[in-house]
Length: 237
Image (cartoon, rainbow, N blue to C red; front, side):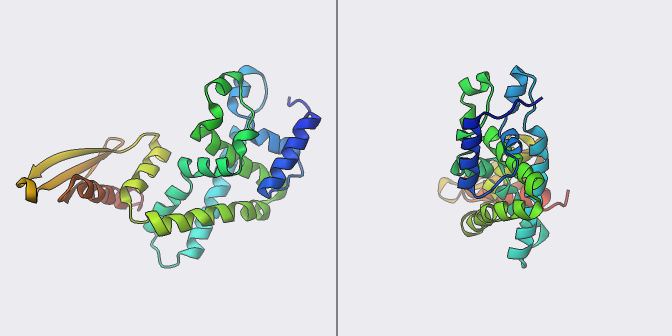
């Protein structure tokens, strides 16, 4: 059973919700979205994991809708690549910090001691939980209005600066899906130093893609990453 909110916590939550432009009718629901599971490990209290599950789905719908509207000439595979970056842990954690979620999180004592307020996974999960709470509190329209500017800004950033960086796209996707980065392996190197060529494969959770080739290891890795992105994120395997 959730204990009643103290007066000072209510004031803190009202100020926080006003600062992020998301008014909550239920401060208890907002408070739950900011309660990490480490609290449940130390006391018999509910946490934000179920709201995180819901918020992840709402976030995905908003991101897909905006991508579909904003990028009418992009293929399904290209949209999927951009979406994987936009909703990645790194991106969400950055947004959470901008919105100062770290200051209002409720953590268990152990998580607090080990720097939980700065952990990307906790911040990203809390943002998703907050989105889920807003959806339950005020409906999809309110959730969409809150998420759309955040997602729209990230879509623009990826389109302008990172749309062709396949290594970054693959890295984000692997971290989100498998919680570990891809591994690059040089399988062949030919030619003299002034005219060298590299053949590089990439290992994604046990699956090998490539080889990519190039006159430098960096360019060969980019080509290998492109091959992997086309196969995995483009949805052909």
